Image (cartoon, rainbow, N blue to C red; front, side, top):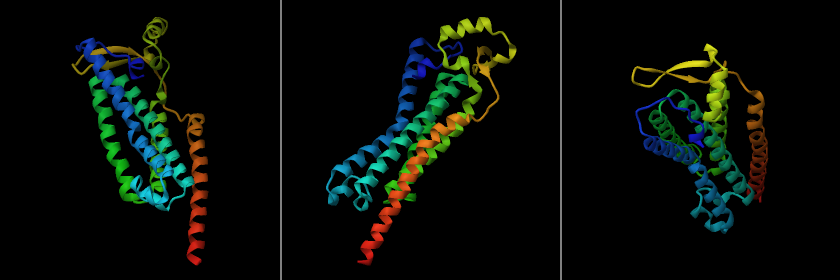
Length: 237
């Protein structure tokens, strides 16, 4: 949960206001999976429909086999997963350096950009080709998630621990390199302890993220090639 990740500077807002903003932030973060969830529902509906009724669920699905529709829904799930990881990772970073309100507005802005971009990819770039469209969305989300892993790789340790643990470790760690002077937007500085490291690529994590996608991409391309071959054979007959 977002509220368990945030260590906030002392602010003028009330605890009730902070709770409300954190709740809204969690809702916006969860909304990152909404396009993928809609895609999965449409794919499942097309799978269980008769072939002549599939277009009512998903544009371009009448020419797809059930295997292709299943792969399409899998790509949508993958896209939703990486989109959520991206939103969560960015919120972790923003909660470290900015106020709750600023973090909420940034998170809302990301979703306001991602929703139309997903719609544009599915309806314009890959019109009537849902499998290719969700492949594009899934690969874009994966690439962004990997970049996010590098961006937040210098925030370790105290950031992901509970407030009581942070307080105990604050007494143990008084090294100046572990203390950042962060502004609170009012020209004042507040001390906040996080462990700051150089950004680095965590290749094991990147491999864990990319391996399932690579396998799914291989299977999808094999199914697409098989479908193209079947179409060619029917055309020859």
